[in-house]
Image (cartoon, each protein chain N blue to C red):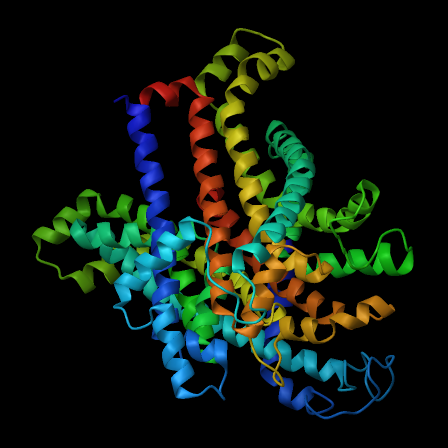
Length: 318
Length: 267
């Protein structure tokens, strides 16, 4: 087995371990609660017989580890149980919401990545001069703004005062392309504000590291023009970190959408988990949490793997 | 004045206001003094909130809650995270490995999702809220300080300390910690700003401080509806949160520059 595939296996194993750990914490926590699922489904007025019957049906008498295994096996087949609050299968409620969240995060990444990576490269090229300082100050300000402040400011200006976009980003299956664009514009701008600072900093650090390497100095000493040094010598090596940063930005967005979705009442997975936390609809919280974690962990894994594939030195030496 | 000095002054003002809130607030935070979302008046300087309580007074108390929780979380996580990171770096062995794995696992999950799941299971109360945040912040302290402490622990003078028979507590406090102090202080500042934003987000999402008490994030949540009718009520507490983060980040930034800490080491 090559070093690369060994590294790949180790990374995948660590990712799976993280998800297993999360699912265990959630499952055991849920199981230890006073009042069980049967109680939650039937409510306080349920007769003891009905409770007992449902407990048998749900397998609540089995030992904890057996119930956990059964839960995991069902979850792997897409069965996350039934939502306490609506009585419908959790998976049916989650899938459309997940699609909406991925659309929002994807649109956010499509805007943020070129913009923030471009600014990060600019910042690195002019390091310690005024463009770098200006970009650094702006990114510090952006890191200090709570997401909902940006969101509500955008709503106040562009939805309430100017009326260009709707204040609530409602989307349905029947929404047409223009409707989607109108609904997504403000949330995507808000997401860009949230995530750009992070992406700019990562890019700047990566590019500065390349620009201060020996071979770039060598190219400069040889007397090559600055444009040639950057385009032919530095940028090809920047590909690997930039790909990785793009994936990390996407992963960051998947989490960033939670607050944004609540601000704009956008029907995504973030809004779903928040509503579920409000009702203490535990099967729903657990399923949303696991789905969020799986997406987040997979994107981080993809970031590492793609960065390695794009860099021959890492690919061969790892 | 430099940016760092300005930030320090701003931070001092915010802390002073939070400490003296019960004396300088014109009204008790829960008494109704004007109409719902009323415009600013002599009675209520920043107008009324969703049920006509004084928004200005509630913001002062909200600041108190936000800074108080951020402080409790930061102190708890700093004590725990710094101790664990330094002990792991000095002792190595199985403890180091277990802690490293545990932190990696916790960091692999998005923090806000982790917090929401834990709070949904345990129920939201002040102890569970602060406890959950301390666990999450401890992992971040550990992540930054463990490698830094590892570099220090590998130095020759620590070999000498070991040969002299110095105990773990002494080595930690007198040999390793002083060298790491600038990094530790910068990290405490960053984590404090993060904790303030984090508790604000949780409260905004409804999983933080519960009504009738409200921290700044809770105030944004309570008054969110006002924005669609063109009122500014939710923007006031949200702006104060931004001020906290800007002030703390400004102070940290100045400190990092002065002590020449490599900014790449900081998130």
